[in-house]
Length: 398
Length: 112
Ligand code: HEC
Image 1 (cartoon, helix red, strand yellow):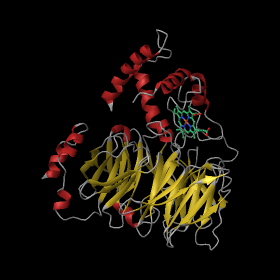
Image 2 (cartoon, helix red, strand yellow):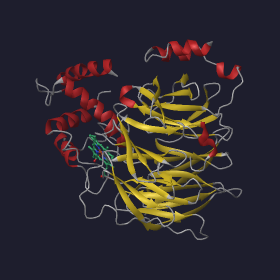
Image 3 (cartoon, protein in one colour):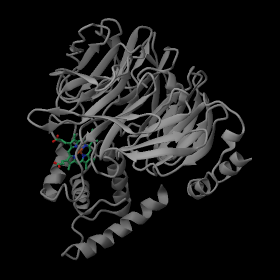
């Protein structure tokens, strides 16, 4: 079969030529669903791998997606199309069944992630340059709205932490301005924008909880975070965890922690502390800190296994060769292993039986059993980073 | 990754010879260290400045954007960071020689 051919040549150099020369339509000619597919970002080569997570195989490499450092992706409602947001402002719509780019546009000079609306009709991209968000029709990628993140006299802020929220809304944060904006596309015509000012110094990322209720922005310039409860009629930002880290000497932060992966389990969040070798334990109802867990390095992602029992944690340079697993009920580290250099991204299978892990500097993606910790597969990839499984199509904020 | 890493420092040092007035390149390191630093700048500085160094949360680190800064000032920003901003101090990780080598090469156009 074609797939076999592809696999044979999927060694690092040869794959490129082979993959583009012979389009692999194996997945389309044999009927199949997309529910167990994933894409893997190859950041240095501007390519994407399409993986079958049941067979634990790479089925296709798609090239020509530009600068994919810090790239991320969202899925269409039918989980057939991935929208990939590149660092260079590229927005690519990829058909993962055909393994082909449907459309690709350069929508800005410098971008950081995006989101898709709850109805699947709008794709929004967060831009550093020019600062603001741009919104596109998900089927055609034609522009729908351009919302500059203006503040002060006529300055434009970088935007971060863009997520979708229920009711055809997008929420995002202005890094330079310290504001949170909610763009509501539920009406016909122009979106309504609600601006929340003074939310804190240098917010660098944000997340929305899986129920679409809480939007939380991390602050670099202050010890603390800002929280908006979207269920309130008049949603007002308030500071949470404002004392954390105060009075203690911070370590230099070599990589900004990501908030997207905040681990929620058993009514508690585990979150990476900025510049500290700790996870914070936060009560998910009161947003009060209820404990800390000492860990191996500065945490980057703390991701809960989908059942919420364990969180898997990875770390910033120079300790990024290690993964620790935290038992959430007892708040203790129960397992530690070293997958290899720069183990930077983890993605759990939708029901958590396995986890896929990018080991960037080994040029490998590993698959582990999350119960036995046994390594199930090692797949070759070129400087892999983010891994995105199609189950994200059906979740708020992803 | 390996074959690229070996070729780069060679290209680099010849570029340094051609490009500069002095015969000895200003801040040469041994080639193993140069390839480590090339990797560190692309990957780890790249996580905030973009892997192509065209900017991200931190601004671009391209020759045009650094034209107004002397190599010495760039090296001291690298070692000391920018207090109150996400630019971290690298002095625990990088020596002064490392920082000068990075600064010189950022100004020249950083190797791939
Ligand atoms: C965690 C994010 C982060 C990392 C990692 C990082 N930087 Fe920065 N850097 C910044 C930010 C943000 C600024 C802008 C600070 C400001 O607002 O003045 C900056 C500013 C700079 C500047 C000053 C540029 C100018 O135009 O004034 C230089 C030079 C620089 N960084 C070099 C580096 C190098 C070299 C590395 C890797 C060894 C590195 N940075 C790693 C975030 C980072």
